[in-house]
Amino acid sequence: MKKLIAIISFIALATAAMAQTAEEIITRMEAEMSKHDESEGTAMTMDMKIIFIGTISSRNYVLGDKMRVEAKKEDKDVITWSDGKTDWVYDSEKNEIEITNAKPKEKSETNGDTKLFQDITDGYEVKIDKETATEWHIRCKRSKSNPDKDAPKRMDLVVAKGTYWPVSLSTSVTAATVTMRDFSFGVTEEQVTFNPNEFPNANIIDKR
Image (cartoon, rainbow, N blue to C red; front, side):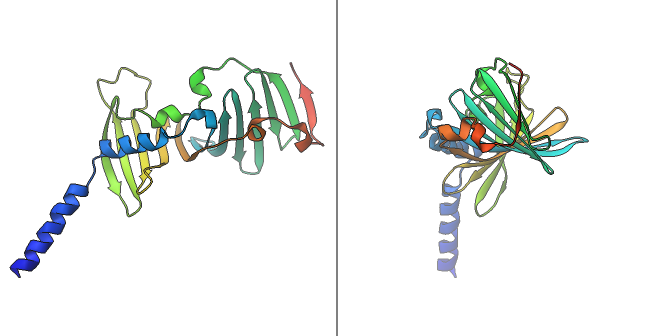
């Protein structure tokens, strides 16, 4: 019996030694992401649950100054392309493509929101909220010393075990809950470049 207790105690100590803190998990996640460069292009799915409107889901592709956003709500599809100078917007309900001059965007608006996955521990208190066989669920609470008062008060980060890859990041903004998921690197020029041949029957309205 003493030998069995000793073995159990040894396993418990070994398991405790393998346990990781939320800070260590996030550091490993950031290290995995840093193996890639944003010049490869980034893609992610964004779900926005808006009060009184419902959930709008979009797939976002960014490569340099170019961007493509595929948004869907119920039976309506809206696809937007931008190269920094021109915007193209396709409305499936109207079967129209509207072309306009692009509005100036801040760099942070066109980087695929990858910055949200970096330096999370700066300005946030983090702790493991839940753990499953495949994922860590980490609660990130904005610290009082955070100089950015516009930063979300709380974020919920899910990290995959084994790969340390971000599974999702959720937060709440004014009247909406936003979840970013299915994050990946690797976007081609074709994915972010408007091609009129894909919409031969659409009505084109050029407002430039």
